[in-house]
Image 1 (cartoon, one colour):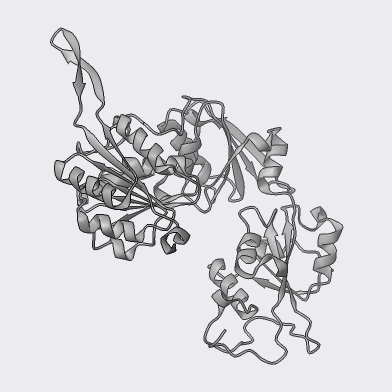
Image 2 (spheres, helix red, strand yellow; image 1 turned 30 degrees about the vertical axis):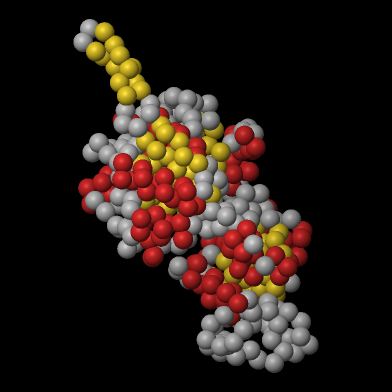
Length: 439
C-alpha cells in the first residue's frame, strides 16, 4: 500500500447503513433509531436527511452530485483497501472521528428502503468488504409494492429503469407475467406504456405506485393502450400485469425481428449457435463480425446481466445492430466496437467468443489468445476458405466440428420442395483451464 501517507493511529472506518422509507422516522424500528441517535455523522440525500427526527444530533451531510463520485471520495478517505488508494495525504474534506485509542470511527449512511436492493449498501460492501459494514434494512420499494398489490414477490420479475433504460423491460414481457419496474423519474411510466404498445402488450394493466409508504402515497392505474404521457410523481414503482403474446427467451427469433441487409444468421442456425455458446449469467461475449447483431442479441436475451462487445466494420450494419439491440431491450448491455483485428486488443478479455463474418487466421488467433481459461469459442463458416481455417484450428486446438445444412419447405411452381441453405461448418472449442495449460 505505497503512495499514500497514513497517519499514526489511523484505523479504517466502519460504516452503518440505515434503510429509511418515505414514512421517515416513524417507520424506523428501534435498532435503526438507536444507531442514528448515537451517530456523529450521517450521509444521505437531502430528502432522506430531512426525514430524521430533531433528536438526531449528528452532522448531516447531503450527497453532492454525482453521488457515486462523492461516495468514492468518502470511501477513499476512510479506507485502506488497495483499490481505493490515491496518491494524496488524508484531508479534512470529510468529517472523521479517528480515535487516539485506536478505535475505528463509525460513519452512518442513509439508504432508501433496503440498502442491499439496488442500493448504496451493495456499493459500500463491494468497496471495503462486509466485515466493516453493518446494514439495518427497511422494507424495499418492491416489497411495499407487492404488499399493496397483493402480488407474490417470489413470482414477480424485477427490472431497474434507474440503472438501465426503460427498454430493459422488453425481454421480460410475456402473457401473464407480473413485473415491477423501479422508475428513474416521473417519465418512466409513460415510456413503459409506449414500449408495451409497441410490442403487442397494449392490454397490459399499468399501476403506478408513488411515494410508497409515505403520507402522500397514491396509486394510479390504467391500460397501456390508453395511457397518457402526463408525468407521474418522481418517486415511483410501476407494476405491469402483462397481457399479450406468450414469449420465450429461447433462441431462434424470426428473421424479420432483426433489421438486416441480408447478412443475417438465420433462425435455425442462430438457435443452434446460441445454444452452442451456452449463455451464463454475468459473462462477457465477443461477437466478431457481428453484422445485424442477431447472435449477440439472442445471447443477451438468454444471459441475465451478460454483456456483449460487438465488432463490426460496416457503418450501415453497425447502425442497424444498435437499433436491433435497443428494440430487443438489451442495448444497454451491448458495446459497439470497430473492425478486427485492430479493435480486439482494446477490449477486455472475454468469457465467450462467437466468430461470424470477416474471420482470418490473425483474428482467430487473437480471439483465442484473449479468451479466458475455460472459455468457449464458437465459429460459423460458410466460405470454403473459412471452413478450412476452422478445420485446421480443430486439428490444432481441439473441440468439435459440425456441418449444419438446414433445408426449408418452399414453393416449386404449383407444388413444393425442400430448398437447401448454404451449408455451414460450426467449430466449437473450450480453452483449457490454466491448471491444464501448465501441466
